[in-house]
Length: 439
Ligand code: ASP
Image 1 (cartoon, rainbow, N blue to C red):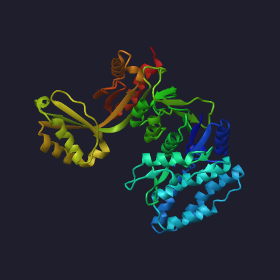
Image 2: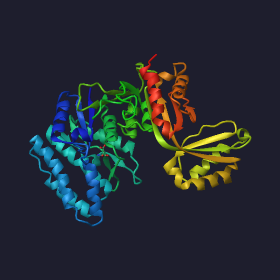
Image 3: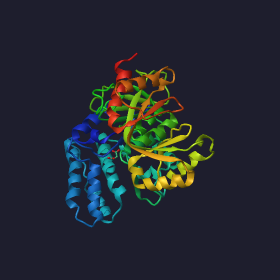
Image 4: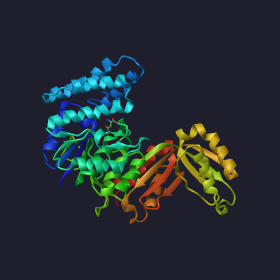
């Protein structure tokens, strides 16, 4: 058995946190490959090293003096090095970074140094080999991640390596330029390493004990999720449930490697298991609820729409021509509604409307703003009667007007559209009916 362990920024924000991480790694010799983030916040008002690097590089790019900002970053690492009692100097690395900043090496290069340096510190602390992610993780010229090439090179590199630290968040392009994933991308690196090393488990250590059924900012002390499938998680994270980077699921999912979300500050908690499939029923009919505000619905009506071949395509073409992606397209007999993100749509609204008029010649177009979408997700819904009924009666009791309903063909989720103002009340009502009044 072997494991990849990825630690988030808050798990590595200080020497004290590093010590907890060291204990976790040493407690299990299967934890062979370590993927660190950059040091995160030590306290609420603190700044993540990644953000310090972005700000510092901004100055460099404008040709301004950035020495104070760079030395503040160096101090963050020095504090960790001293706190751990390591004999390690990062002088050489910082001299190189200064040189590269002056040469305007790029924003991605700048941000990636957070993980790069933390990887060096971590490798020194653990006595593990350090493998620079720029040598084993690749992006093409357009900046898209190259899965195959990476897997080939990284697997070969890891043959015979007993233990290693591979910094998260970045890789390199053909021309040697450093490229990062989007924010929170160390999760993706962990998944890529897990796949290449063919490990049995990808442990993702963070500052919460796994996923919760609902957002704790809306529901007080929500129940945790023990086991969730990749597909369920995909639905939930798409709808805004945080904790894990969306793209982190794909590499391990292909290999059927489970992800275990754990809490560095409470290592005794089992956390959440993310798996391909499971015979374990979730505790409730639903596995989770997530949602987002800020949608717009464009309602399009036309008599005899149902018999007009190509109507839907023409409508969607108007969105495509304006570079707007749609979220949902529920339809009736003579009506079709397109849900889009309001902030994307807002500036192009009249162009899209003109496009629909030109292409599809509808009778009326009516726009509704300030809507929220809520996804109720659960593998248990397929085999349970009355789930939709329970959702609607709960929402009716809570005086929430349902504007849209869309049940995915997989019966894994039900998406509900409500007004932004009803968002919290709707989530509370759904949580109550499934979790608090469990059948
Ligand atoms: N340090 C990067 C960020 O703050 C990547 C990560 O932590 O995963 O987004």
